Image (cartoon, rainbow, N blue to C red; front, side):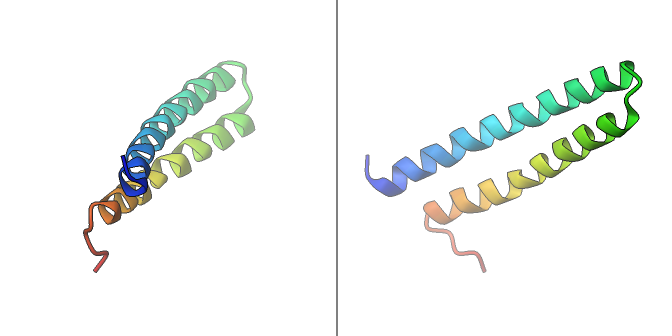
Length: 71
């Protein structure tokens, strides 16, 4: 496996983990809500939202590894 193929594989792996982390942040935001910690709930929800926004960057990076231009 050459470096570009390895990078493409890693990007897919990182994207998968990123999505899993976002789900975990949402789970914990719900727990914080149950604990009546609204500020913490809000922060965890924001972290989850920003984490999910990274999905587009992972996809763009993967497509660049496949030789697609970003035009």
